[in-house]
Picture 1 (cartoon, rainbow, N blue to C red):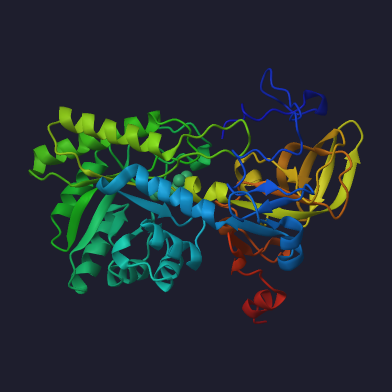
Picture 2: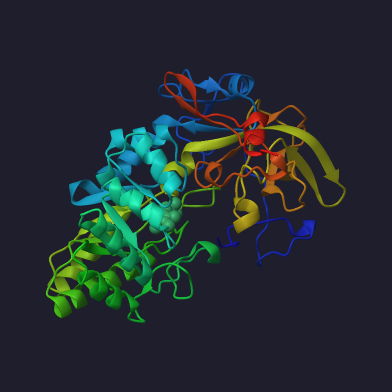
Length: 469
Ligand SMILES: *Cc1c(COP(=O)(O)O)cnc(C)c1O
């Protein structure tokens, strides 16, 4: 992620890009709809609520904390369904939307996807098991991964997954043998490295050349993979796939990627006389973590991707292939917030105030891992106190255990207040750990009718069950 949208006060000693100052928001009590789940608002007493119908009758966060404890991920089911539907509708019948399960997966999520007409990407045996346990039909599942095991491939072929995205020559051989032994002709896509540097954090930009994913387009490995796959009777080559990164805000990278994928389709037609019917442009669309982020809407993205594919195919005299996309973060990210209780508050004279919460890097590793930016708000009440520059930190034994690097909270913040970090639906619970033997928080789904735990909080018994002495 670019740090340019990450202002911080120079008087606090941080090394900063030129000209950026951390200014407190004009209204500390406001819950910007850009970063909060759709049904989040405040009630007449100033307590944040979520769920309800048309902004009334939501559940207040104090009641949620009392019932489910903190920290907890609170997920707005209506928002999830609305976003999933928006993606499906934006692309229409001529395309497939695969939700990237690694962003956050549970049985309830799989059910909602099934009901809203989306497909599902998985990238491990574990994710596949959850998908199947929740009744996702095999043909609506796609399997990814740069190092799938024989067991994972066997399981996927047996489950009849719609396609497997093949990532290496070795996998072509292994999968062909497995499909043959099961007497199946397995549909596949080939993962191609298109050489696009998405403007995002290095660790989540995945289509430049020097990386572990995919087969290089420019180096000829992708074309060679096509040759090898076409020579296997047990593999059915449906098309090609590219995923250029994550938390991307412009479509320029996707346009280059689409152009290069269509170029490969034309080469395949010229060399082999086959027109592959599908291209998959991957996921990676960004969301707003702070009020400064301006993500694009699915309809806009769909229109520009469809147009570029149509145009490139017309100029290559190819029939336009069916498009797939794989949004993860863009669907689930904005739909949840993490609810924490404030504990220790430590003002460091001339520096900043450290606000400790009852979770931390075990429930949100993204700040430590990617320098991710988040916002935070006092949600159990409003306050008219002056803004105070804070760093929200967890309770783990690491000084890098930071949840929100720089933010403002009211100066009268006190132990026992509830604060919440919005836009934690993606890559927080799914990357959660038991570091320091923390108990991973529950995911509580809220809809118009109430709240329901969809993933329960871990217990000490859960930890001890794995530790067999
Ligand atoms: C991670 C990933 C996605 C989803 O990325 P988001 O940034 O969450 O949209 C989609 N496809 C592939 C292959 C991925 O690895």
